Length: 92
Length: 144
Image (cartoon, rainbow over all chains, first blue to last red; front, side, top):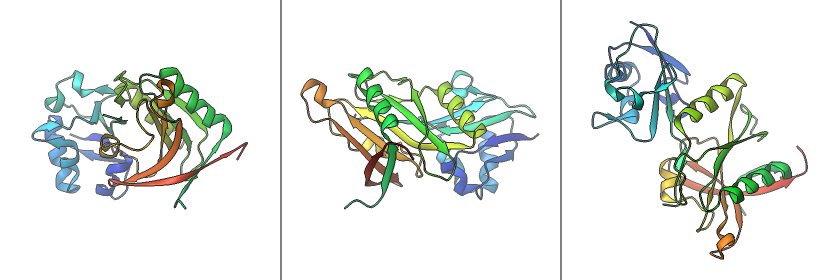
């Protein structure tokens, strides 16, 4: 089951500079674990304590997975996953 | 003497300042995109501050996706990521540094603290790479 994952610039250090990679898994959690086997270090940049990091946005077919089932969101063959770090900051 | 330099047109400079002024007392934020690898800011893209806060900014997640798709389709990258500080100096805060994820971008900070007499108006530019902040000179030109 192949899922295309689009990788943001900041995480391409783990994918030899590739903008997109393929992975497998029935859920996002499984997908990120699968990516980790070939792109060591990437999982910890996305997942922390079993949850998605607060300032990393993950989209399944253009929908923010926070409005789906978060890291437990189910995946199907041919899905597209996009990872984008939040653009955030401020004086606080 | 500062290490790097941001070269920006007067028109783009004015657009960033006008956006920061408009959204005061909330923080304003946005991007100036440019052709990949050229380091030349060209396309002004003001963003909505989804946090609508005087002390925090965050691009709306759907807007963020749309922005990056669009830049990808046009072979652009975020040359400038700007935001305003409304009561403090235009220097990256700890929050700014910890969420800075574009090592290739110029992080422009504008302070609108002068509005409420809390400080001077400032327009400054920085590189933020792996937690290291480096201020750079800002050169305003009529055209590239």
